[in-house]
Length: 86
Image (cartoon, rainbow, N blue to C red; front, side):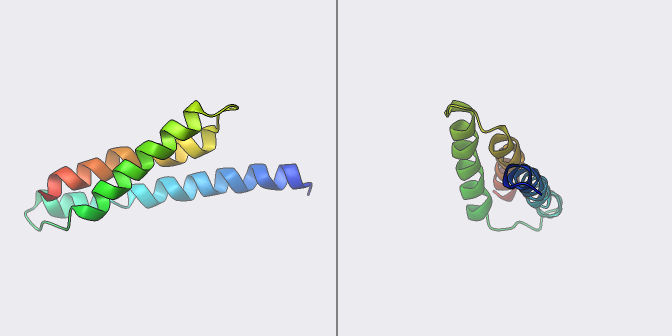
């Protein structure tokens, strides 16, 4: 396998795993909505961090779409987990 091909597959594998990591907030969100509030700090920091990475991936030339796509769910799930934990 060529290096360029390997990097391509590596980037998309990391993208899928990052999305799964942020989707894993769903159980915490459900617990928060059921009254079992979790700590809001970690999801808040994750949401802010992901916002910065998405902006970076979109604004850099050339764009880094796998980076932006991987971090976009972190914005949604991070901030939802934060707000439901309050």
